Every structure is written in structure tokens, then in C-alpha cells.
Length: 98
Image (cartoon, rainbow, N blue to C red; front, side, top):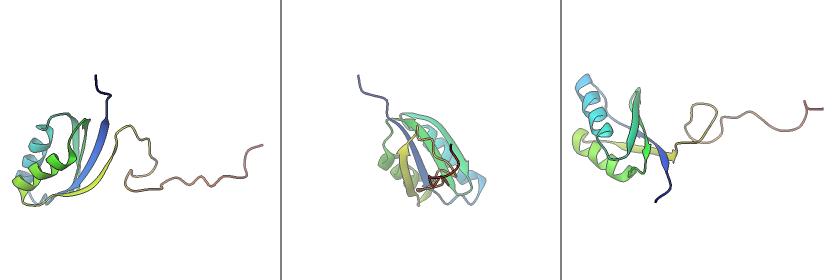
């Protein structure tokens, strides 16, 4: 039995109109292993178990002519801030605790 590998994949897409948004969403949720997908502006965030980020990017490029893979991370990360990139926390140690 393989261990669960929850992934969070963020892609940037040309979502100019509602037709393209529906097409991208349908392609993403149709991939094997996808458990959820959401859209934020021109980005689609896909969460799932054992997904192939390259295959997902290729499917979206085929349907929309452009898709940029921005990040792949462990889906169980509890990051502070917006969840993109590094940092986000403002804890700099020292002072405050007695």
C-alpha cells in the first residue's frame, strides 16, 4: 500500500472568460487523484492525492494553449500568510516569554 501524498498544485491560466474558466475547472477535476479545486483570479489551486503535476499542466495547456505551473507543495502544509512562496510568519524569537 502506498502512503498518502497530498499535494497542492498552483497553476496560472489565461482565464479571460467564463468558457475558459469552466473548461479549466472541468479538466482539473477530471484528473486522477484530484480531491478539490478552486480558482483565485487567474490561478487554479488543485489539491489531491498522488496527482501528476506535469500531466495536469499538459492537459490544461492542451485545452487552453497556455498554463504555467507556479508551485507544487505538500497539501498538509499549514503555512501562514497567503500560502505562496516562503515566509509569511513574523516570529523572530527572543523577548516576550517569561
